[in-house]
Structure formats: structure tokens, C-alpha cells
Image 1 (tube, one colour):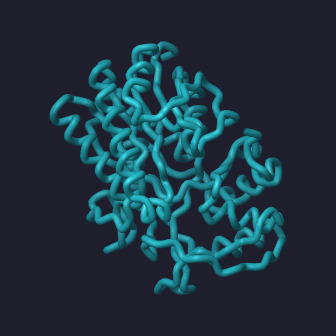
Image 2: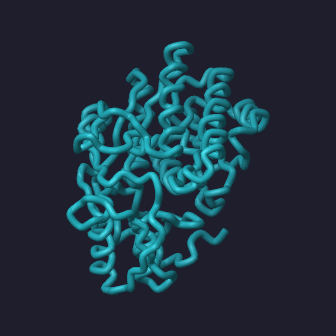
Length: 328
């Protein structure tokens, strides 16, 4: 397996950096392609090519330099709020960059793609838990761009035989169990790290959940440990190598927690009752989402290993150890 080389786009990012390590631990050789706009050089433990996916010449040069046997595609802009404010950026980079990448795969005979998609493709939940047969009606441009790439992947398989698995994951959270790697977005928009940083006195905590019709009036989400997500990317690649056809698969815990429940858990696990300020509600956010992971279990033999308390505890270790994030 040492000769099997994988290109990981977005491999300097949060989920990407964990996926790189999981692939390496499984025996794969990994090359990272990242523009470092959201990722961190210090998070990368593989050869790094710095570039934009929309730069066709740079992408094709990367493919010429190395012979890739598969691509794991995580590079994307991921802010729901920003996608509502600047949809053009998301169409150009998330969709346009993906098409350049797929064209490079075709030109260089790369047969497999594992694509990082999102639960945002579903939009408002018509029923729960959300499974892969749920209608896809994204409520924001970020989710819409991910759904577009999924559709292109299906078309590229039908026309050219490029097989793929799109992993629709729910809220990535947590950190390495020893606190050595974690989540470092700038600015940070995710609930768990912001609540932890509030507990540690690193910044004020602002509640940005829009008022919704749920038991406590805050949005309900499904949180899945980043280590579990990374493992799923490896299993998806191995499924494609076994001959599994192009498909979409959910990755979630199957349980929903409200924003207020998460804040209370952070306060409980840190022992700090921090003040909660009301921030500006995030647009384009459905009130309730949690996953069925039955298909992931059936197809990939995957199920989440870590629960919400382990997720938060690992993130607390990371933010305590590295309060300013990665050194770069």
C-alpha cells in the first residue's frame, strides 16, 4: 500500500489535517494541496503544495509532479454566513475549483474521489433523523455549492467512469485526544470552540443561534468527532477500491443537542459559569438537524466512537494547551 498515493485538498484545514493523519496511519502516502486561507502550515505532516484549486495550471502541475491514485477533496469555503453575504465566492471556488480538480483527475487517470460534502445539502428537515433519501433543498449558498459538486460527481461517473463517495457530514467537533491538534478557524464561527474560549476567558461568548421553535428556543445539531470523520474518509476510499459505486453517505452521531445544551455542557465540563451575550443570529440556519448513520454503518462499517462529552473534553484540552491556536 505504500505506493498508493493520495492527494488531499484542504489537508491543512481542520477536518483535512486529521484525515491526512488517518490516511498515513492506514499506510497511504499523502500529498496536501491547500491555499492556507483557512488551514495552517503547522497542522500539515505531509508534503504541502500551496495553491488555489481555481488555478488550473497549478493544479495540473501538481498532478504532473506526482502520480495520484486517488483524491480526497476537502478544500472549500465553509461559512454559512459568508456564503449568504458573498455567494459568488462560493460558486467560483467551491464549484469552479472542484471542476478543475475533476478535470485533472480525468487527464491523469485518477479513478477515485472521496468528497467532503455537508448536511447543509438537506435544508429544512421534513423528517428526522435525516437519511440519504431526504430531499435536498439547501437553505444557503454553501450547501447549494456542495450539492452541485455532488451532482457533477454523479455525472462524471456516468460519462467518464470517475467513481466517488460524497460524505455528508454533520457538525465536525473535537480535537486530538492528547490536545495536540484541534480546531483553529479565524474567525471562529462554531459553537463548541467559541463556548470553550468563553469559559477559558479568551473571548466573550456570544449566542448566535436564531430564535427557533425547539424545546429551549435554540437550534439543535448533530455533533461528530473529527477523529471519527477522518476514519470515515479512509473507509470510503477503501470502499471505492473494493469496487463500491458512486454514492452519498451521511456521517453523524444520530443525536441532536441544542445550542443551550452544548453551552451548559461546556460550563459543566470546565467548571466555569461564563456570561452569555446575545450575538447577531446566523442567517440560513434550519432549526433542527440530526443524522441517520445507518448507511455508513452498512456500507463502511463505520459508527461514531466518541460521544458529546468526549468531543467537548478533547476540545477543552486543545484550547487550554494552545489558546491562540496553531503557531502560524
